[in-house]
Image 1 (spheres, rainbow, N blue to C red):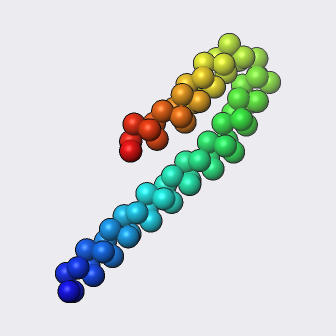
Image 2 (cartoon, helix red, strand yellow):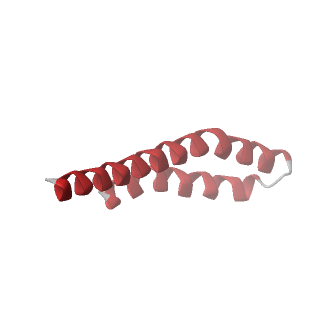
Image 3 (cartoon, helix red, strand yellow):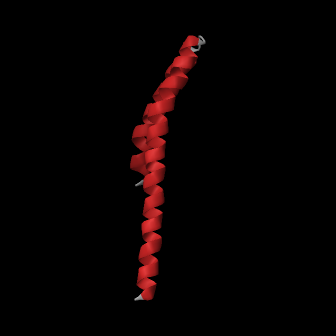
Length: 68
């Protein structure tokens, strides 16, 4: 019984870290990618900002599907 409680606790800790990491990635993606793209646009790097946007969007939609 004690071993089962320990295993359950470890699994819950792992799930909590995965959830926290997923939320952190989502918040950073939503908050900082637009700021980076606006900064690149202001700096005159629009030709570089568009591919970064496309790569970021592909990564945001495909990486969670591949990792599951």
